Image (cartoon, rainbow, N blue to C red; front, top):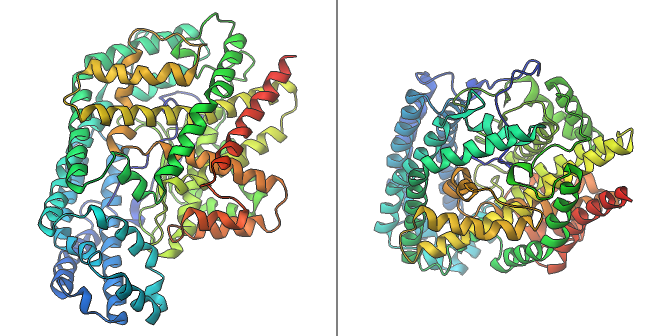
Length: 606
């Protein structure tokens, strides 16, 4: 089913009249040519029939199948997933192009309901797989190598075995999913419909968040104050969404017997809870040598006694404020990708030429940036809100990395291509690092190098420190909700409890900042998603260190890792590079790269 991947940064897009060049738009014809396309009706009709016949042929009979019969069953299920994914990708992408359009919202909602109804009879598939004895499945794998390819899929399914409910309850929860989706849509539509009056100009949330990176401090402050005011005016709606979503999750987790609110995310990410805890602890312990130390430098650069939240993403006084037009952004990223390996450039090139990127900022368009893989027999689509800032170039590099990863992983087929969130950030963050290093090598002056280093450190802090603070906030939110309904003030207090700790003593916090949890989409759409960013950044920092040391055959090993998609565990994928994420010292390696950049910035002060 279509699910929105979320933006890496939360203050990196807006409306602008800058001369950005000819910004590309999506051409969704490779999915369907329109709402009334005959191919769409054909696929819906096929899907309804295919789901019914699948249930009729296999329900209650999985244990009786021989290896070829089981493989046929798996391939039919994979085809159903592909057609359903194609339909919802089309509806979802159209919706995110214009979230304020009632027709597009209804179209997506209607299709989601149809597909939910069609696929409800298929719930038995995973339930019956989990009732098969281990030795029975192992025997089938031994008989058929094509079937054995799918073992990682079955391993993921069987990880949920201890938390599985009765067939009737699982079908009920499947049907009920559209209700949870409605709360997500309420959040999306509320956010998209907000208006912010800043210095006489009416802006959407993207335009207002973008002002937090404006060179003029007065403009940044005005934007922050208006954000706080509008969030406060709507805080009851956001609190209701969070209370309902957290309570729904608590009920489902309780019925399933999950010990923590985070466990479901860990299982879907195929990562051990102790690995996430080691990551979280390593980052929190490193706050003083990372964010606290960097923001103290930035406070001095800005000439302030104390920084306010509207200074966090402020440009540096020595920063070049010129706009990077689209052609230059494309050339920068493509040069970096091709220099690493020409194959990467060849995979990335069609995104720019074939309508696979939607870059412009438009009223009603979804905020942020994402890369959506659609289905394995089409191609990914990348969404940006491009404004020509250097950070926008890095966002292009990031999302294009996702796109390259998704193209390569598509070779695995529908059920094995999907990469766990913890590994899904690998190619994106690595693409950013390649682009950053290329830009750093091209720096002509010490001042240019300083600005590039500072910008990269800020991005890494936003990716690692800020996201782990988000994770801690979510942990506290879900734990508190188990004790009863949370008022907006309760949620505000939880938010503030992680902010000072993560940002450090350089900051003061304006009145109203306590409501800034309200607009973060991760918390609503995908609870506990956020630690995947820190996981990915730490992993890539360690990976890049191996590359920088001249590891023989690195490029081929890197491509093999991306091609694996979701067919291998992180331990197996990292082994060829001599890395192990379950080793607590692994995370310190990644964090030391950030600390090293800050060391270099401090040395420039001498």
